[in-house]
Amino acid sequence: MYKNILVPIDMGHEEISMRMIAKAKSLLDEGGKITLLHVMDEVPSYARTYMTPEAIEENLRQVRGELEALAKINGGNIATEVKSGRPSPVILDEAAEIGADLIIMASHRPDLTNFLLGSTAQRVVRHAKCSVLIDR
Image 1 (tube, rainbow, N blue to C red):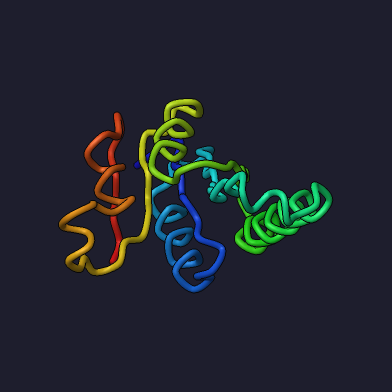
Image 2 (cartoon, helix red, strand yellow):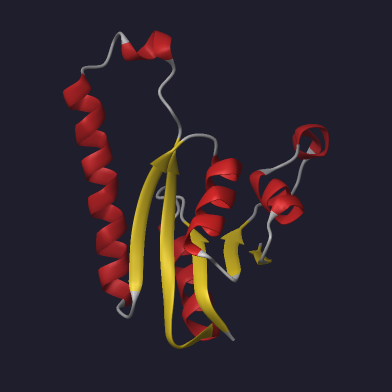
């Protein structure tokens, strides 16, 4: 069993997110903590000129609200974090920062592009300092 589980969440896939949270809850020690993390891609500088700072902030507020609602639905000791950047380094940094002893994340079936570039899940598995559970 685990005391501190990090669950990266893709807000576009609620059913998968619910499944990952259920897995985390089933593996969590009594008194343990789950952290849900959503990583937002950074807005490229050329696109920022077409977006107001208010629009960017509103998008961030909306994502935070959705993630907090997801945590509330699932009850228990669930924290939420929304960060921006490239997913795999942000996930790895967050796992180190919170002292996660397990990362639970979903992965799709690999295709040719994954063999050439690698997926987020592959990068996390390769570089994580804690256990990683991948669900397909």
